[in-house]
Image (cartoon, rainbow over all chains, first blue to last red):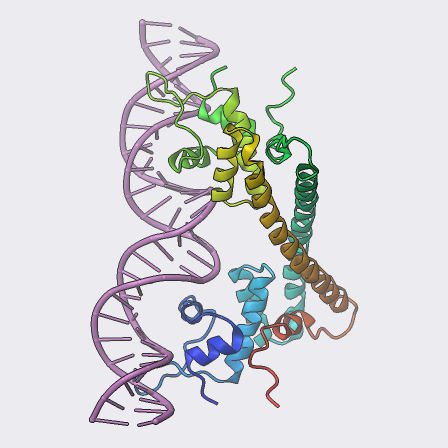
Length: 140
Length: 140
DNA sequence: TCTTGACCCTCTAGTGGCTAGAGAGATTAT
DNA sequence: ATAATCTCTCTAGCCACTAGAGGGTCAAGA
């Protein structure tokens, strides 16, 4: 089961230069090479890369992934760590969801008002302008 | 009403270098300067920058903001454009919400399972590893 | 008026997480 | 043997900022 870098890319959905980049930053180990110098991977690399890709998609930063990966090798002692990484990430994720939900509502309201037939006051601009930080508002 | 760049920063929550950056890329017009060469802004800049900041927070890219800003000057004719920018953004936002919601569920499930007292199998790693692209799965 | 301290200037370089391209070598199928 | 398709390294670029060096300016108080 020898995979070229392209095979690994196809198997995981990652791009070839991304795989090399991950190797460069130490997220993937440098694999053995052919006589000609080409990288050859095994099944395990597919899993590891899938792990990375999925975590990235879910918004984990490289450093967090690095920590998580470091734990997979160790015994279960450090589960607490993985847990706290996930926990702090959870808060972040929830904040993002909230913001995005507010945005979605705003966007769809803007759109529906706009296409409602009224003279286009372009609420889009208004709405976006209104909600800035209010440190300098309230001018009395 | 003459504001220094620092005043503008405080008024909007943007950072000073960010304001200069926005000027550099043409998102904010170059303001008049004092004799000594320091930037001086007026009220209008606060609004424009608030607009930009809010839009950025909501995930609009600089180019989209540029387009939106270009429209604010023009008559209402181009509302259709603003609308379609918002519309395409809406789809994106909804996709992101979906992904993040899935993640949140996964994360909180992992966390609750982990702290449930069971031997820590660290489902976190499992869960993250499982959901990669499946192009190479189904090995029969 | 002078001084002090906070502010501001420009410029270059760095960040994260890739992505693109050049120019050359390796592998594979026919 | 040859052609097509990888793959290699290396450098540079992307976005949207952020940080730091080295110096100049402004406004308030003594």
